[in-house]
Length: 240
Image 1 (cartoon, one colour):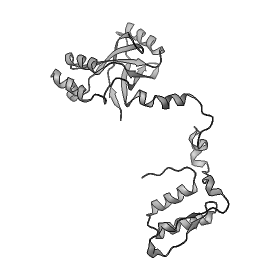
Image 2 (tube, helix red, strand yellow):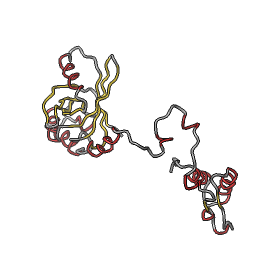
Image 3 (cartoon, one colour):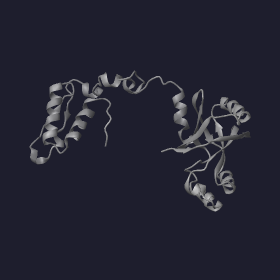
Image 4 (spheres, helix red, strand yellow):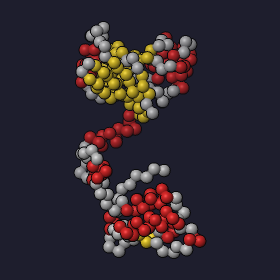
């Protein structure tokens, strides 16, 4: 789920403890956020505290020009009090400050402020419902190329259709000579199945076990297929 705010206009660039923050306004969302009564508008944003435009929230500026579309990431720098002070006097616009990660956008915004009368650009904000600091460690880790990637054969970016054509290997422990899975416990007591072993390296064994599970186990056909798939593949995605 993302919140989208349209009709973004830059107003100024001001110093912030994190660097330079961009002051901008955007069209107020429909409903109580655009109510005629100031107290109703303030109550809306106070009730949405932490869910809509919270300080430190991750946000993306989508900026379309005749040259194409660019996306710039940043965090909301303004406090809830700053936001509510603004909507108290304006029912149509919401004013916030954003600190962008890429400093190059600041020069571009300054140029836009100088040419605002002739600009036909389309700008909107897309808000992610997460706090940036909560996902910062994950994003920082993605900057470095790891020495090893688990299941790199499947998870690393590949050409189109690669995953449809590649062979998914069985789990390494299942490839040990003589190893088998015992699946008799998946059958009801009255089925009389005391021993059902499957050897993942034997195509015939896998096929016969799949049929046996579909016909007589406590599983429905799709669950039986899922069990066989996860036992015979080192990586699998199961919907449930």
